[in-house]
Length: 234
Ligand code: TMP
Ligand code: ASP
Image 1 (cartoon, helix red, strand yellow):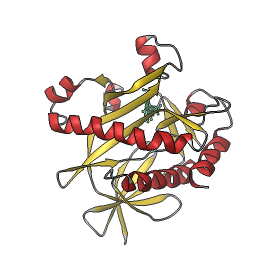
Image 2 (cartoon, helix red, strand yellow):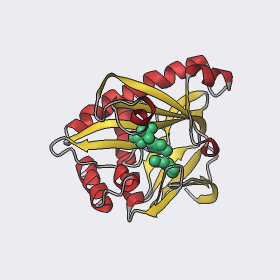
Image 3 (tube, rainbow, N blue to C red):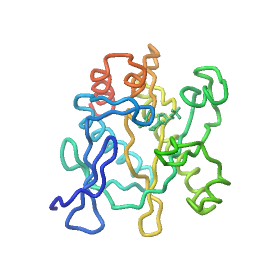
């Protein structure tokens, strides 16, 4: 496998072409942003942690029957993945109320959400990734009604796989964001699943074990990412 030109650079990752038209290298950076990149920083070795955790979780999900873009881990910061066309929809699953839903709806922090809630956000930085409904998705032709149903079912299934996995590791899976891509007409789970894209609360102490430490200046960011890595991959 030869790494080729850079195809895309996002806030936390770079995507490189390979000598196979169907495969890309996903490289994880240490760059961290929050609030639509108004806040910027670096979290040392975050890229390594997120690549390893994502690789482990994609493997776990593949075993559970969820098709993902993950092919294999290449190095500390790189994974080989299917070249997908990312759907411009961020799917958020919530088991507890925190973050944007509290500001939007005035819910109490930590409120149990059962059955879990699935929300869609339009992936557009210029617009600040606004919340959208199924009807917006249809109106804007972002996905077909069948694809919308599949995104919801897949996201809830992913939640059912991840929740007990983290529970066994002393972590509550509070909420998370997923991105999906189209590949040969199939929907594959893509992007990453990491402390950047999930919220984890330590079951014993309630400590925040995710990017909220960066967003809210809670300190001990690097140590916390390493602790999540240890619990997931150690
Ligand atoms: P929110 O409460 O800010 O809407 O975030 C919901 C979940 O999505 C949370 O686990 C953090 C994650 N997330 C991202 O991965 N990327 C983002 O740009 C945002 C805003 C949230
Ligand atoms: N990734 C998003 C951004 O930069 C925000 C976030 O994760 O809170 O801006």
